[in-house]
Amino acid sequence: MPELPEAETIVRTLAPRIVGHKILEARFLTARVSPTAVPDLVGRVVRRVGRYGKQVVFELDGGFLRIELRMTGLLLWRGAPGPYTRAWFRFAHGAISFDDIRQFGSVRWSESFPDDLGSDPREIGAAEFTQSVRARSRRLKPLLLDQRFLRGLGNICVDEILFRARLHPLTRASRISASRCYVLHEAMRRTLEDSIAAGGSSVSDYVDADGKPGRFQLQHQVYRKAGRPCPQCGARIRRIVVGQRGTCYCPHCQRQRS
DNA sequence: TGGAATGTTCGGCT
DNA sequence: AAGCCGAACATTCC
Image (cartoon, rainbow, N blue to C red; front, side):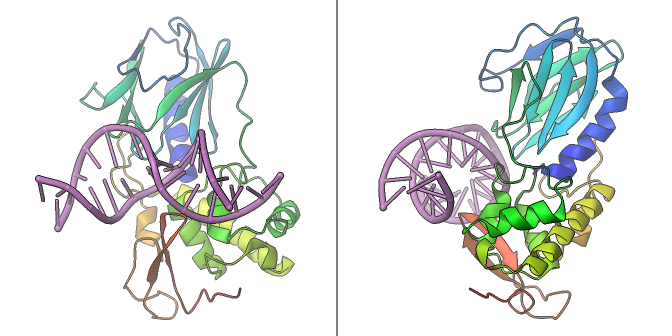
């Protein structure tokens, strides 16, 4: 499930391979993968590879290719086209295949760099973060997952961040003190930093552009750990459903306060 | 066999 | 307007 750390890892493994190189062939193998019109890409040079939230963005001559990986999307360097390859970009020295078993992902074209989502969680400052969190009445978990609020956090990141900050996922954002918001901000930054340093989390089948899995799942404290002892206090990790999302937390370390 | 689980976004409802 | 909830997507697992 590529979230911000996985998208960041893909960008870092892919950029040195393709920046400055010309696309010689572009194929879209299903109609679903490109729901909006994409112009002819052949002959365009990749100027930059970046990330926008969980999306991987290729800056080409004349526009931007936004690749949304969703649940099962992968970008593989030199990946031979397989049964799940939905798009294919060939260069002189190799190729990228966009593989996506469940076909929730997409490749979209836009003429400008995207700006339709919230702040990047690694860039937002503590003061601005605190102010915007406390202005909302929603529960913390759905708020942090809302890409219009912050771009890039997914279910894994949020469960791990809330555990690190010792905050219950159902806590109302408006009821958190400013000092606890600062703690949450720091937990968010450190969790993302640690996850990126580990190359992201490989649950299900995530691998980077070189086919290498991430290692952050080895450091998960609560995500998918229901029934197991909390690494801090030994209490049983609990699983609840919040906004239709499986949510794991420690009922002792993360006490509900509202 | 079929129903639940999976993560994310979107549309509709309150 | 903000927030909540169900639908939809495709596949695997039990």
